[in-house]
Image (cartoon, rainbow, N blue to C red; front, side, top):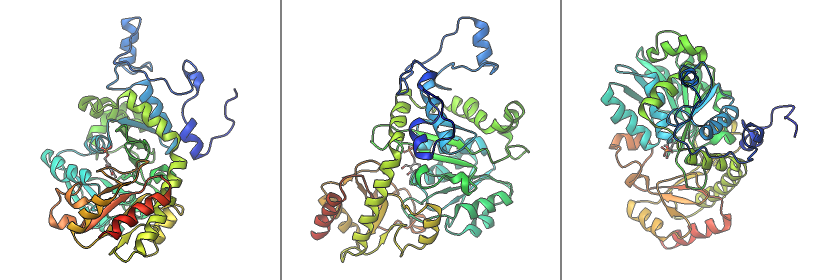
Length: 418
Ligand SMILES: Cc1ncc(COP(=O)(O)O)c(C=O)c1O
C-alpha cells in the first residue's frame, strides 16, 4: 500500500487521520493498549523516556498509545499543533482553565454556556481565586469592555447551549488578540464538520467527545487542541514559563500533559479512546443527517400552532441566522428548542414522547429531549437563566439520525395531546 501523496480531505481524515496499520501490528482498527504502564529493558532507557530525551510511553495516566492515536487524529482534523485527550469535556475545560489562569486571574466568557461550564467558572474556579465575567456572546464589543489586566483567556461556545445563539468567532478572536489573549472555542455542538474554529482565529479548540464525536452514547471523553496560533511567551502565563523554556511553542501542551492532566489524573481510558475513535469515523455522514433532520424538525415546529417559539440557527427568524450561515457553511447542527407556555405543558409533552428519549445528553444517534430549567440549568439563578434564554417553558431537543418521518410523527402525537 502506498502512502498518500497529498493531504486527505476533512471527512477522510475522520477515518484515516494520524494512523496507518503499518505503525503497529497491522491491525486496521487501532488496537486497544489496555496497559497501565510500559516496561523498558534498562533503567537508562526508562530514565531517558522520563526525562523526555526519548519518545515513549511510561504510564497511561500521562499518555497511552490508543489515546495518542485519537490525539493525532484531532491534531490533523483541527489543523493544530497538537491535541490532548482527557476523561470528559469538563476535564478538558477545567484543565485548560487551570493551565492558563491562577489565583487573581479572570476568564471572560460568553454568557450562554453549557450549565456545567457555567458552574465550573462561577462556583468551582472561584474557590481557587479565578474570577469570571460573563458577557453577551452575540456582542463582540462586550468582550472588549470586559477584558481587563487580569484576564487570561476568552471563552465561547460555537453555538450557545441551550440558548442556541451564535457568537461571531472571527470578531471575538480579533478582540481577544488585540489584548494579547487567546480565544478558546468549545466546538462540541458544531463539530469539525460545521466549523474549524482555527480558520476563524480561535487559538484553542475544545470538544466534549462524549457527544457527536462518539455519537453512540457509550463513552465520555474530551479533547483540547492547541491551534498553534498563539505565542505563549511573556509573563502573562506563569505556569507555562518553565515549559516554554523546554518545549518552545509546545508550552501549553507540555504543561497540560506533564503538569495539570498528570497531577489531576483526568486521563482518558484506552477503551473509551477506542470507542471515540470508532465514532469519529462516521461523524461526517451522521452530522449531515443530524443537520437535515433538525432542519426538518425546526420547520415543522415553527409552523405548529401549539408551539410558542422555535429556535434553530437555520431558521430565518433566528437573530444570527446570516452569521450562522456564513460561519457554519450552510449547516446548522442538531439542536432545536421550543417554548410551550409553561413547565406543566413541557412535562406533559416530554412524558408523551415515545421515540425521543428524556435524557440530559446531546449529540447522540437517538433523538433526545430535556427540560433545561429543571435539569441541566437548575443551578442557575434567575438573572443567569434570563441571560441564557432558559425560561420555564423551554424544551431542548437534540435531533438524532432516525428516519425523519418517525421523529416528526412522534413530536406531532405529543403536541396533539397538549
Ligand atoms: C457544549 C458542551 N461542552 C462541554 C460539555 C461537557 O462535556 P462532558 O459531559 O463530556 O464532560 C457539554 C456537556 O453537555 C456540552 O454540551
